[in-house]
Amino acid sequence: MLSRRLFDIQVDDEFYTIPASVSSLSFDSPPVKANDLMSVMTPNSKRNDDEDSGLGMEDHFTWSLPKFTKRQRENDDNSRCSKRPKVCSDIKAVVTKLEENDDFIADGSRLHTLPTITGKHSDLKSITSQTLTDVLNGDYDDVISDYKIIDCRYPYEFEGGHIRGAENMSLHETILTLLRLPTKDKQIIIFHCEFSSERGPKMLRFLRSKDRDLNKENYPSLNFPEIYLLDGGYKSFFNEQPKRCDPVSYRPMLHSDHSEDLRHFRVKSKSWTFGEKRRFAKKVMKF
Image: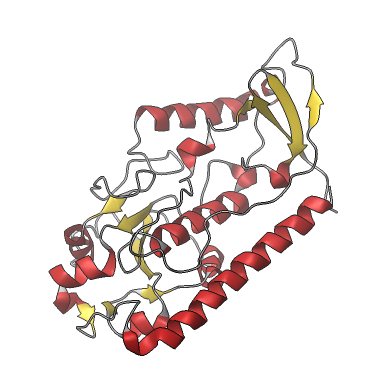
């Protein structure tokens, strides 16, 4: 039987109580400012309008939340935390650690294994084509137990040339299958699309969001705490490491021979996003 759980958010100097299932924070914690914790622990979903964005894949949902239940500030701001002091202390310790050093992976358990660069997406950890090549060469086998390369391009792009060993996951449904896999310690995932400017970052953030939902009772634990974005995407990798691609070819999303395929997959992306909005709206209406 499902129970109705409430979550407290502080806005300015007032506290509001809302259902946990519609909160952007996915763990049970003391009242915190809405942007404090998840902005540190989970990549944001800021829209990026550049060359890989003509997809009809929306970053964000728009909905109306139920009315907030306003409550008065308690004399002791830490009254709830005092009921679960160890849990609260552990969460605060992880957040503090991440704020002081953003090179920790998303569960705060250790530092990132791969060297990262500052890419187009400041909230994501990006790696170069050379670093990925080093991973493929086995240079990190002593510190990585397993890795997955997730190619978020459309199937006709993937078939026209992809990084050897990569898996094609262009739809949200296929990304969700990752969360059904057995987890491994020190496993990493590397996302990319054509330029790693739209689809790859979007799917990376989607996986992290669903991973947070799945592990909300064990925050800050995650199935996949160490995720990277390949800077420059497949195009950049192909230019630098063509012999690592199969076949040795590069088919762009806007290829003139695949306009119908592009239209088809744009419709599928929009359809999934619209369906997700409706499912979320129905959940909200139950409260």
